[in-house]
Every structure is written in structure tokens, then in C-alpha cells.
Amino acid sequence: MQLQEIRKILKSKSNLKAKKSTQKFVPTVKKQYGVKMAVLNEIVKKVQASDFELIAKLWKSGVFEERILASKILGKIGNVDSDKALKLIKKFGQEISDWVVCDTLATQGVRKIIKFKQKEIFKISKKFIKSKNLWQRRFALVLLINFIKDKRWKKEIEEILSEVKNEKEYYVKKAEIWLRSQLKN
Image (cartoon, rainbow, N blue to C red; front, side, top):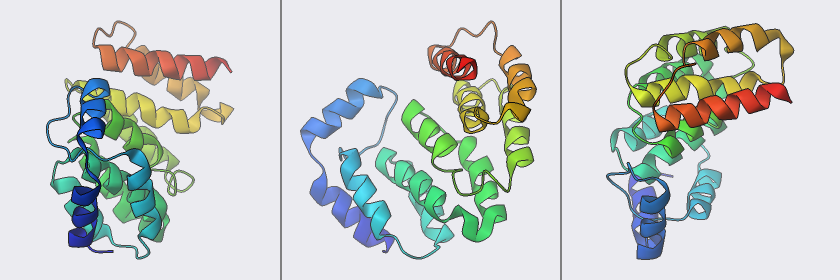
């Protein structure tokens, strides 16, 4: 599937109701088509090749749905070249501007490389948690959701969480609460 084909689908499936819904739940979105998540998931299923260039182009557009697609496709093919996938995750993590793209990249985007790149993912989290950018701090926390079930990482997760114990930003605080609740289970 090529970029032009994806954009044609996004334009044809866009609607005002979906656009308004996204604006309500993701108020920081600036550029969007107004496409339901089910449409995005169908597009991801159709992507067959390990096209990291397509992922980079989708992300670069800055359009909400294209960034979600980039994250989901990366999560689907990341294990083809885990080093390239990790490089994109680091780059994309610096350019996040809303909570949905943040959470999609931090959970689904790393799905296929998490087993191979655990230390590197923690390194990204430790770096981003100190950022002045609220989306990078949220990204740092949501990345850690991937490690909740593995008790070996509990101490490191708690150390990173300690960096935001006095956090005031709403979206970072919500991620902190989410992560802490998962740690208790």
C-alpha cells in the first residue's frame, strides 16, 4: 500500500462526526481527516511490506490519523529491523503533540521490538522523563506499561516514576496514575 492510496482512503472515509469526536477527546489535535479508528485498523491490516519509508512519510505529515497509522504499522513490522524501528521511536517520541498518538506509539509502536530492545526502551524513558515537554514525559511513562508484568523491572519503573511525583501537567499526571495502578496489580 502506497502513501497516495492511504491518503485517498483517509479522505474518502473522513466525516464531520468523527472529526468532532476526535476534537472533543483529543483537544490538542491540529491537523486531522476525521476518520474512525476502525478505518485506520483496516488500513494497517492491508500493509504488507516492511516499508519504514512509508512510516516516516506518514509521521512527517503531522496529521493525526497518519501519525497513528505510522505508529501502528511500526508496531506491526518493527521486528523486521529492530534497530531502524528503535531509531524511529526515538525520533517520533520527540515530536508527539497529543495523548492518543503518544499512547499508540508507546504501546503498539514498540510491540514487536520490546523483547529485543528492553534496555534501550528504558534508556529512552529515562531520558524523556526529564524533558520539559509534557508529551515526552507522558511518552516516558506510557512506554513503561510494556514492562508491568515483568517484576524484574519494578524497581526501575518506580525510579522513573519518582521523577514525576510532583507533576502538575494533566496528561502526564494521568499517565502516572495509570502506571501506578498497573504496578499494584
